[in-house]
Image 1 (spheres, rainbow, N blue to C red):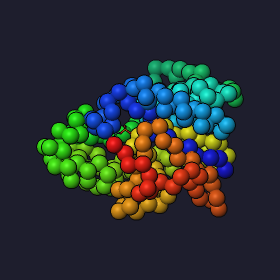
Image 2: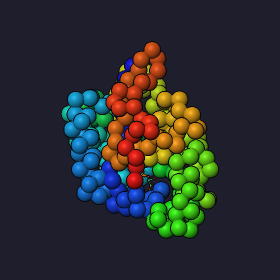
Image 3: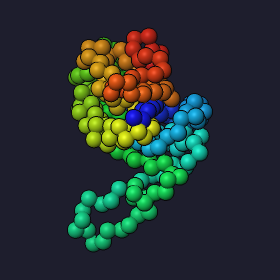
Amino acid sequence: MGNLILVRHGEPGLKPGDRLSGWIDIPLSRKGIEEALECATALANIEIDLAFASNLVRTQETLCIILSGQKKAGVFVHEETENEEGPERLEWYSYPDKLGKDLIPIYTTPALNERYYGKLQGRKKQKMEEKYGVENVSRWRWDFEPGPPEGESLKAVYERTVPFFRKKVMPVLEDGKNVLICAHQSSLRALVKYIEGISDEDIKEVRFSTGELAIYHFSEGKLVRENEELGPELKRNI
Ligand SMILES: O=C(O)[C@@H](CO)OP(=O)(O)O
């Protein structure tokens, strides 16, 4: 059985504490790049066989920086077109079965995207607290449900992230591959809720700081967290 490494992207240009980025596509800040480089060093001795990122550039940039610390190079995979009746099926070299053994296939998916923040998307957290109240903004950000007005709850993120994880990631872990997933605050909290069996109530306390790693190995058929336990004592996120 393989190891699973989860990592939240490095700090984006719009600091998570200032604005709620959601699906707004923001590159990493200098600090975010430094955080990704620290992750590359921390993971240099773990051979990564496969990697996943969201469709947002902050996770893809983080992932590429982390993989720069590996012996093998990461290559973005372009899956075969679903539409067999298309005018022609182009044979991309980056089809997973074509990639050489000395490359790390990187899959991107919207299933791992940060939540859509609806009316709060891209807005200053403080302004939203003034408008809707600190309590409401906190509940929308950290509770399992409800989510922000016209946005996704953590439950909604869970319902798109976990099925992807079970279908695309678990089989390769069970096949002995080491997998790295670079995602976002909400999509990682959804995955940790599923992997660690955390209740709808207790998930409120689980947070990932930018550049934070969660490393799991299999024990008696279950994924067990290796580094510090996630939970209330975790660094409070800004
Ligand atoms: O969208 C955001 O602002 C933050 C916090 O929710 O998420 P992430 O930085 O992990 O994408």
